Image 1 (tube, rainbow, N blue to C red):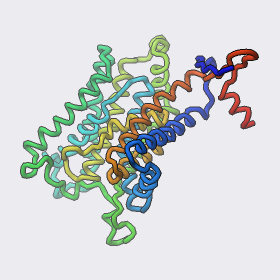
Image 2: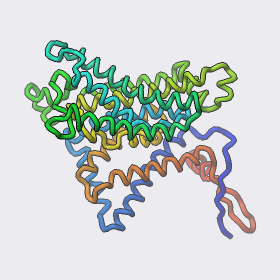
Image 3: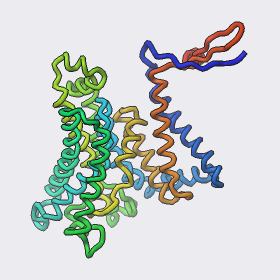
Image 4: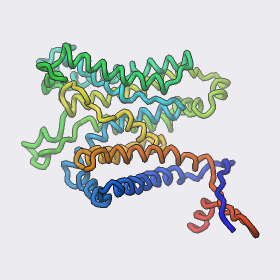
Length: 379
């Protein structure tokens, strides 16, 4: 007598708890698999994971660093979640991030306003708008190509990532280079987003706390995206077009227009992330301002199952991976975990579409549904 595993397509909706369970399971399994890999190269996985926790959450300073790193992931993850909801595979968050950083920097580098007399709030507002315009522009291009000519958006968004990076490099190695280095001069403080560390003289507790106002952008964006997807007519259209384009077209929805709008909205959020990074963290335009935020944002969106609230939590997890990855040896551990997590999350989607049946082969064979068994035990 043996056992046989069989996947059968679900005829009913999956349980509400299953998406969260698959995401949590994917993360835990990713750490287990990464642990075996680390062990195979002579590292101590338990020590690395304990150090990972200490480096990420061991002090208020490290927690603030985690939230700072989570901010661009949050904004890009929200934009990715919105486009993925419509089955538009925007993999261009990295390029949109860079173009948002570039356009926001133009407020200072041109400059667009008199930085000596213009109030901070006006400078911030203009940088935010320009950042979103830059990201939206780089979302508009693949959006039009997909909507008008049915050109695969995965290819176009990936290629635009390289264009954006080298576009930035052209200017920071050329006209706006600071003494030949791959960066511009430091922005004047009127263009710096407020940080808690700026108030350390008044409040000693804030000393070394790098948290900046950009995190507020991310939280507000999460609320807006949640409202769009769950409470608005546009969100209903996005879901309908993603689930059944033929039905949406039959219902009279303008699919071309909505594809372009979703791409632009997604790009605008990534562009806002770029603005927050140059204004709140590095205070200049420079090479390598992103630690693959655009690609990590894709993982964040998938792991959160396109839920804007869950994107906040997952962004913090991945922010912790980035912060800890700067100090953990061997290097690259954080990217190893991210890659394995993405693979497992995508693979786990099978459980949302199919149910696993275990059948005993041989005499008196009987099929067992693990999901049903777990539910019965919980009762």
